[in-house]
Length: 223
Image (cartoon, rainbow, N blue to C red; front, side, top):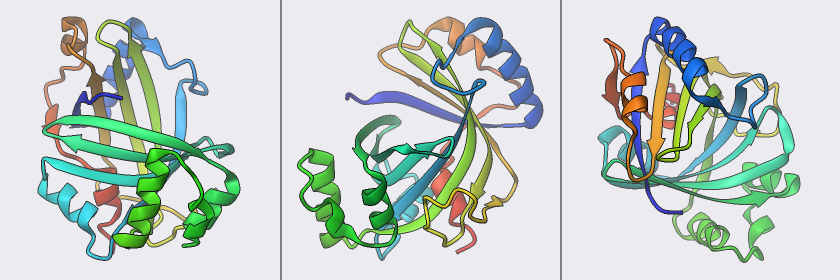
């Protein structure tokens, strides 16, 4: 997959309500969502030096993160994802994991994927061994997603962001999580070659500011 443009904006709750109403009237709801929403759980990995955390906080132009993710408590479809950033552009690569592989990785048993042949799996295994990547924290949040075909635009509203602190037991859906400081709401806009003026105008709010907000970094503030 090629890099896509990505912009994040931290917004107020009032802005979220206003944007949701506009998006529902103009954009297509993500057909894969349940009642328009996803409940997302991710387990993020970092090395012994917290490189991914420090690069997110510093806004380093070129950076990457690995995570395991599933949706709505459904452990029949779990993915390993690599999220890469480059000068405001983003790219995501992924591969499906079995329940047993995800559980093993969450508990530091990395040999479970040693024989996987996909490029992302080979890279991840190599960095687990060579860079000493380790599971760091669970990140939970609610997402509402909207689509606009011209420009391949995806607009999301993320809220109820919660951290599992040092918990890495990814597949225990009812493990204890707590809200992150400030209980922020995040508007994210992604597109390919161009952002249609309709969407550009639609996402404008008086208090919206472009932000380098990182859910992973925010969920590590209690460390």
